[in-house]
Image 1 (cartoon, rainbow, N blue to C red):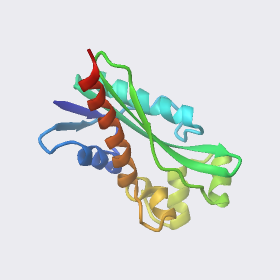
Image 2: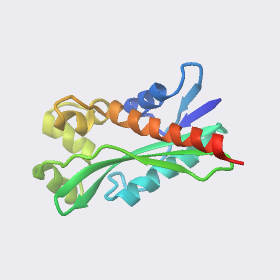
Image 3: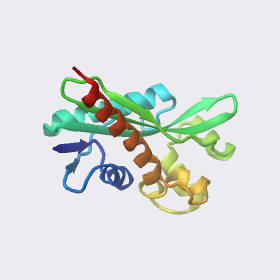
Image 4: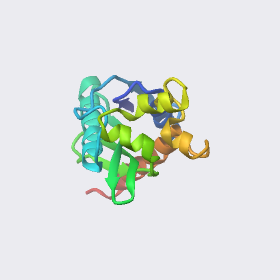
Length: 171
């Protein structure tokens, strides 16, 4: 089986590797999400994940395409990070799963509302480069108890579980 992930981000790649057995071939490709660099709703983040999954499947003629996308969602409580994943396979509708949400501090949220992207804002905020490729905002704001790999591994497990269920129960 050949799994294609539509990202070169090390945290996303590790999440996919964590979710599949070691003998599965996993290929990572730099696939555009087709949405803004900073998705600003669940819908836009889901669309980015589906686009990455579908386009990665077609780009490398794999068996399964995976798209993982991080974004933010405005609520009455403030701006939350949101994370979505999509799994696509031939002759099957996309499978979708969402992950952890935490409220962003208002000083971060305001910068995003003014058009900046979370990754560079976090780099500036913590004075570390490439936070998005390592612990992510979730790692910073949970004091390292949950990191970006953990968060996306959880989504991957939900995607694979749904895929396996559908494989067992399809006629």
